[in-house]
Length: 317
Image (cartoon, rainbow, N blue to C red; front, side, top):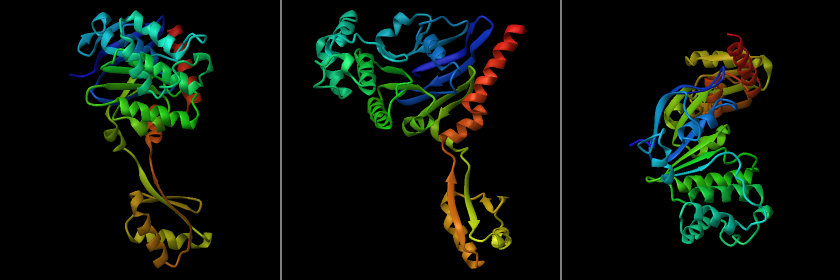
């Protein structure tokens, strides 16, 4: 059974279509990255799937239950939507205890989730004294209280420093196993690449990709960049490349050769045999961010401008 399914899922706000005819499945178990540029409808999609707002059209399921009846799956789902909010004057323990009481969860579970997120020993500290990373951990602890089969986290590393990001990433990977599915919404591609098993990619509410991370990375471009120490040696370097039948493009004195990154040594040997000393020999391989930008087609600023044009067109059409 899939953890989440969506079929033609749509959500409109007036003239703006925030979620546009989405159809995808999220497999059970592991970490699933739900990614897209800022303003692409990730948070809106999550809210529709969790039954927090109604879909304008389409259907979906969460843990086999229809999203039109969230009461059937809410007890099996833990969610952290945007930044966690706690009462600063209360301790971590008291904040969690009030939440547990509302859901009929025993205090034993509070001990367990504090241990899981690494806050054991800090349960008596006031929430107001916590760093941003600790507050994120406390938010995840709150989401884990019902021991959920599905954990949904919206931008869980937002605003964290590099050390905090690594800590949260490690925690989320440890939480995902064959029984639990962790869905992480984010625009930080490096973090998603480091922890996700599967991906759902959207842009302006439209689906661009749904499937395994490995499957998407098959589109990664590999190349070797070489540059001669002396510009006058460029023709000899190109001649050595052409003699081996390697495809290439040149920009100034840089030559980009279409070879696996692991073949950089072959390029070095070819240059040496041609008597061309190199000042640069760099293997390169696309990461998820490179592929993501090819899919989504621009920087955040360009995408924001496109989104603005879409709003204007929708309002005047």
